Image 1: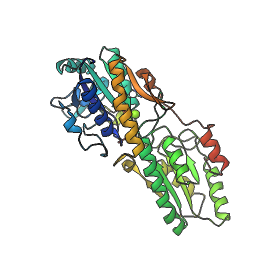
Image 2: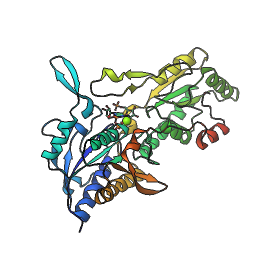
Image 3: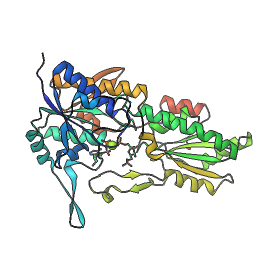
Length: 365
Ligand SMILES: Nc1ncnc2c1ncn2[C@@H]1O[C@H](COP(=O)(O)OP(=O)(O)O)[C@@H](O)[C@H]1O
Ligand SMILES: O=P(O)(O)OC[C@H]1O[C@](O)(COP(=O)(O)O)[C@@H](O)[C@@H]1O
Ligand SMILES: [Mg+2]
């Protein structure tokens, strides 16, 4: 019988469907096979900085959570221990509280920490690991932009939601002869836009990896109009921008204390305003927003998340701290956490883009 451990668990960054399935897999296998004990840490790393945000996490707590969206542990994308934001009077100050986080883990008598998150959460995990904390990671994000793993859970569900939105927008766009722009999440990576754009039959797909020229989109829209189809669907990433232009930003990194990264939004409106200078057709912009992350995970995401939750316990058993679980060529493997710092992007000359172009889909280049 392997040694029973006391493990902390936290979920950090933006939530995504499948986090609860992961927590369930982790706690069930951990309890049954290893006799581990789990401590739930609430609101990401915030739970290791602020008081009263930890609680026992038992198998009983995981009953019925498999199909639930979000995370029963809560999360935060503003709780980086290396730039933690505190309110002092009427201003915010940022401090490095990473030493206090290590002390807190000792107080909680943790033998190790399981950090579930995206590039942000996992690179923080790696930095904590460098300071001596025993951490293992599980990758998550609807953006699918993490290096080291072929897929993150959350992506499949988000792709289904966006595809359904594109399907639904087709009928109203066609009835009104409109150009529909659909703004899709993904930060600086276009995976979600590319794959749901393909699945949902978009006519134009605009990605952060391929800056667009308005003239090129106009040409495509005009070509469609002469074929007596005067409606068009444009799938645009929140991180897409015109050649020579800049990112559409809702909050700069420095405007949100503790956040450390930019909040994107508004690329659809920017593109619509540019197009309106050239075409007569009515244009509408749809921002799908957090609908893309909400609700129950798909079967595929439940399975992948369960595999990650169960699989990370092999890393713990083998003492593979400072590693994360990953999917590579269909297998669950261990990858150094330092890999998670590298972000993945759509390859503009890869198969998907090439085939889409060969079918007549415009990328605005
Ligand atoms: N590439 C990065 N490297 C280091 N820290 C990051 C990085 N991206 C984000 N962070 C920090 O990690 C926290 C969570 O990041 P976020 O991107 O929202 O979540 P995640 O990537 O884990 O889903 C933020 O507070 C931010 O300060
Ligand atoms: O929830 P917020 O703070 O508005 O953040 C929105 C961002 O989070 C995401 O939904 C998911 O990103 P992460 O997985 O890196 O947290 C991005 O697609 C989007 O840009
Ligand atoms: Mg991130």
